Image 1 (cartoon, rainbow, N blue to C red):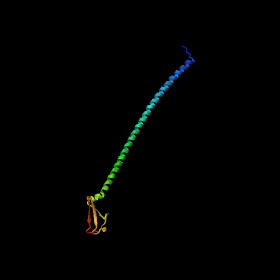
Image 2: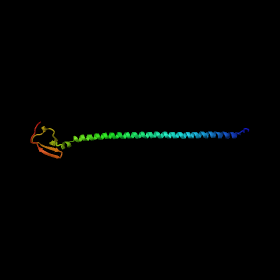
Image 3: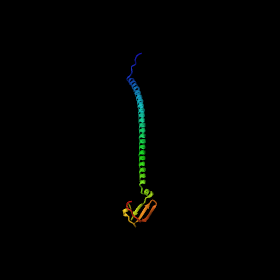
Length: 140
């Protein structure tokens, strides 16, 4: 059988069809590659996002625990300070049976400022009274 000679138009059509088939195949392969790369990228982003979320959760938990520990420490210090203040409170001293003595409206801290006949005031936990000094003794 003899080879048929193609006209210019037929050659162009043949070449165009051949190019379209090759280009279509290339495009199809490229689209498939792009889809695969897109899936890989999504998986990568999702795994990095999951890791970042996990890290954020750990950091948040660490910060919560740190704040709770600091708060507990400060509460303990406040309780300790309150106990110290309470123990040194003048009211507590008076509740133990001690009295605060005043002479002339001023606190009395030494015997040498008092003489027989002076009026003094005594304040205790449950009230106050006045008295007149009958006797003064220096150091016992």
